[in-house]
Image (cartoon, rainbow, N blue to C red; front, top):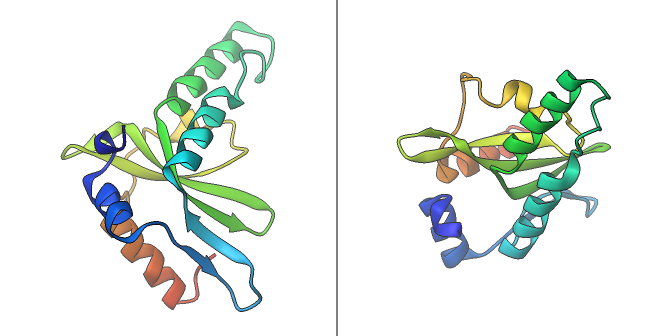
Length: 145
């Protein structure tokens, strides 16, 4: 399964393993997830939205099914803490460019990922290398988290 996600991500894990970033007070800002953690979170994301979570109407159920379909195609690989919100960076296997899945930040409690995830946006990232470089730039410029 990992081979299907991103070659540069797999190469990074094989050659360097995971890492985490801790601030001067010992608080963890972010970390790469282990493959086991990613698989557990992938299962949790897929089960997070139930058919009746968005309301009782047919359109609400349809929105819940769209959300479930999106979440089944997310592969979380990085966790970040932002004040009281837990965020994940995920490969989204249904939005691909040059054979590479997009890398999307999602909030753990966002019930409307399906509403925006398919949109092309300036700054979309499709390589793990570019994602890591962007994250390092943000840290060095004191923009993270």
